[in-house]
Length: 597
Image (cartoon, rainbow, N blue to C red; front, top):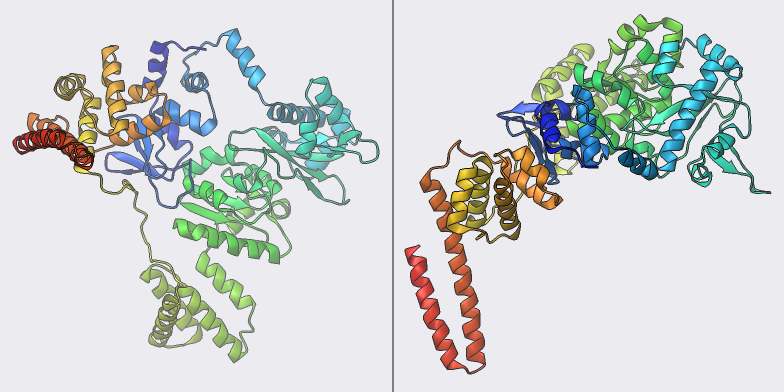
């Protein structure tokens, strides 16, 4: 499908790239541009830059760059027409699709994603509209789930049948083997017959970052075991890379600049119903680096609300360690012993959960002090001293002097100990741990990375500067073409110049976002977006341009001289002294030109 060029430009001109990218990445303004953590590779220091003025983005870490369409294609896996259509729908501009394109899209649709979407709708229908789902509806009603919540999360019900999903998928013409491979169906050992894995369970769809169902969590209606049955890891479901409820919660996370991390999907759903619309879950696994990256990408504040049992506390400590390098504000919401968030809300209500649990969340240090206190007998002098030493070790890891002073004073007041003595011992612990390499660098501020490449040769810097000016001014580009044509000695820059000349020859105005759109080569897009992000003056003086050209030409002469020197040496080795003398004369002439240049 080809989309009309005028329509492409109209849609692009009607959106702000900062607004679009902000739906995925938490951006902070730094000077003229915005910076955030790159969504395309794992990083802890922001190197992803967005220019509202040029309507482009570029990551100085992984090199990806482009315009708003490029971003959506990379982020959502859209084709170019799909990216245009998606943006058009958001702003009310209709982008027509041909029937042929619809057929092609349908043919390309992966059976697994299509089947999982159909099963989600089937289970939801069976729960809400049929007699099969009556017991499940009564169970959910008893648990306090409202119809609106069930609809929002597309909760469903798998009947007490061996072949409901099997027959349904077969009738839709979908192959069954792929669904066996992802744990939705299974094969009976003695006769090879395929049957349903999920039976007589409330079904919670688990979606990927694009909102596609990739797995299910099924809960029994009674006390039979296993209580929860979850889809196994598969080629479409990677638990450690997803956060349950993220697509639903993302707008609220961005708006509040805060995210609440739960363990299970029931906790997320009940919390949402209780007015906590920025909750996600790690689905019972230890927080992974990918999940930590998702949490910190859109929020400055993270509230960890795991269960209060031993496993939940251990998971909380692991989450603290995983989030520490991102330098976010992490707080810990403590649950009463024996209750998870879902059960707490059922017993005490929505307001109590919001105010007495989340609202009373503690700093990481306060959480650790409470935890280590519970492990000691405070009436025993030996235990008290061990507790104080443990806390001093924890304080030595705090990056800010104000924090260290705050908790040292708290210890001093609580145990009637000299503040100076505590400071001295804490400093000794700090020095010992630092000498052993146990402590990382102190960091109190995250600064955006805007340059990761080594210093380039002068001629390449000159080529980049010329290209940056050429992207802003078509007349200047043509003037430079008259002077040096495609005389760029870096292959990528020469190719970029050729594309830019052709772009202007076709009558396009200077528009960096549109130019990037015309580049089909990802490497050229990356280089072009990086150069376009360079800070240059609004108008280039003749001297600036002439100086750049002089540096480029000088490099060209130096290269020719080096080549001639190699040729002369080859001639001498071949005893062709006449040729060597002739080449030497050429070298002398070139060197004179070098001096004049």
